Amino acid sequence: MVHAPRTFPPPPQLVKHSKKWTLRFQAVLNANPPRDWATPQAKKVLRAALRELAHGKCVYCESALEVTTYLEIEHYVAKTVNSDLAFEWTNLLPACRLCNNAKGEQDHKGALLKPDAEDPEPYFWIHPDTGKLEPHPRLDEAHAHRAKETIRICDLQRPALCTKRVEMLMRVLRATGSLWKELCDPRTEYKPVLRHALEIRGQHALAEYDRERFRSATL
Ligand SMILES: [Zn+2]
Image 1 (tube, rainbow, N blue to C red):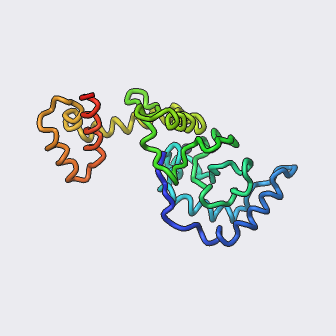
Image 2 (image 1 turned 90 degrees about the horizontal axis):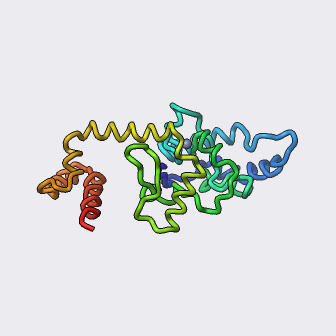
Image 3 (image 1 turned 45 degrees about the vertical axis):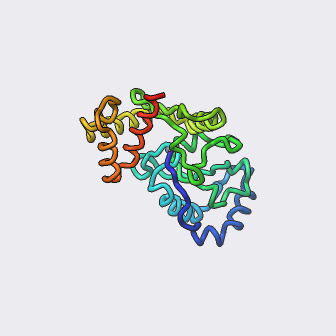
């Protein structure tokens, strides 16, 4: 998942027309034959803003939307669950078709992680051989439940996603080479020097990862 805090205000046209667009949606909600939930103009406004929110990626599976699939306007709370939130800026996220379809109209009651409001990364551990997501082993039961629900609701164990995660891990291993091996070996001498060098070069995450391993090894 992509942590996507809302660092910019909603698009002015959304602010101006959200009430009108919401009323239109509520009027066509049960139309027969079905009608699209938003006008092409409204979708254009929303897509442009949402593309910026998560750096052009799906917030759930991290696929690049321009490359793999078209950006879909995802409602964190499904618009059929609460039609008042259909054009509420804080309820809108960019997603790919596969994640959006998997999630559908499920009423997750807040169990789904909300990547604009909370950092999803601490919730997950990635299996290095299979690329599958798992709840991070340090989570308590309530947080592990949210991680599991997020994986299930968005179908984040799709084989293509697991393959991409393993490929990324292989790239990291190739790029860091013997340094990575030294980091992963708790017997490496003078580890703090290595971690300090990483910190100086801005590799805080890699240094912290090693500290975590060291803590685990001493428990
Ligand atoms: Zn996706």
